[in-house]
Image (cartoon, rainbow, N blue to C red; front, side, top):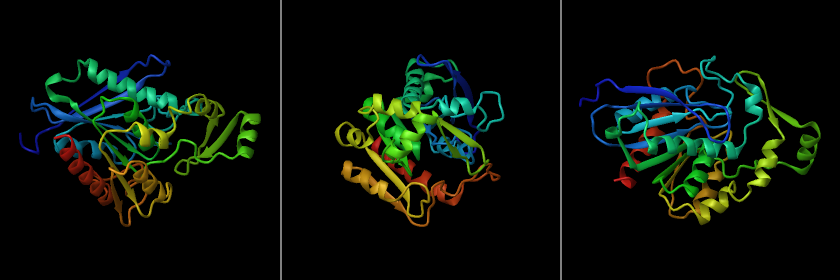
Length: 291
C-alpha cells in the first residue's frame, strides 16, 4: 500500500470498572490487512490526547506502519463532546496516579478483548509498546512494570517520581485547605488539586514508586528521550532513570525543550522539527526491539 494511502481513524469511549467517567480513545492506522505493532500514547499533566501536534504525531506513526492509540485519561478535565480543552476542573482536581494507571489498563484490556471498530487482522498485540510524555512517561514506566502485555517502553521528558517534592509545610497547608491550585500557564486557569492525590499516593506507595518499579520490576526494553533544554523536567531525571535500569537506552537531544517544539493549538500539517526527531528515534527503537 503506498505511503500516501488514506489512513483509517476511529474513535470510541470506554467504560472503566473503577469509576464512572468515560475514557476517550482514538486510533489511527493504514488499513492494509496486515498485523502491525501497536503504540499506546499517554499524555502528561495538563495535557490531553488532541493537544497541539498530537494528531499529526499519530498520523506519522501510522504511516510508519504502527497502529497508534491515544487516550484522554479520564480525569484530565476534558469532556467528551465538549470544547476539546480542559473544561471539567472538578474532575481534574479529583485525579490521581492510581486512576491514571487504571485507565491505561482499561485501554489495554479493551485492545486485547477486541473492539468492533478495530479489525483484529490489523493489530499485532504481541508487539505492544507504551509511549508517555512527561507525567505520562512516569505512568508508562509504572504500567509496564505491572503489566507484562507491554513489550517495550519509551519515555519522552519523563518525570522520575510521582511525588514532585511536596514539603511537609505544603502538605499541612494542603490538608487544612483541602485543595491546592496550580496555574495553567497557557489558559491562566487555576487548576485545583484536591488533597486526595496525596492520600492516594500514600495508600498506594509501592505501586506508585517509580524508582523501585523501574529498578526491580521493569524488564521490557526502555528508551529514554530527553531534551537538554527541558524547562519543566530537569535533564537529571533521565540520567536517574538510566542508573535505575542500566540496560535502558538514553538519547539526549541537544537544544530540545519539554514539549519538543509543539504548542496548542498547532497550526501546521507537519510535525515540529524537534518532535519529528523524537518520533523518528522512537520508531527506530521500536522496530528494533519489537522485531
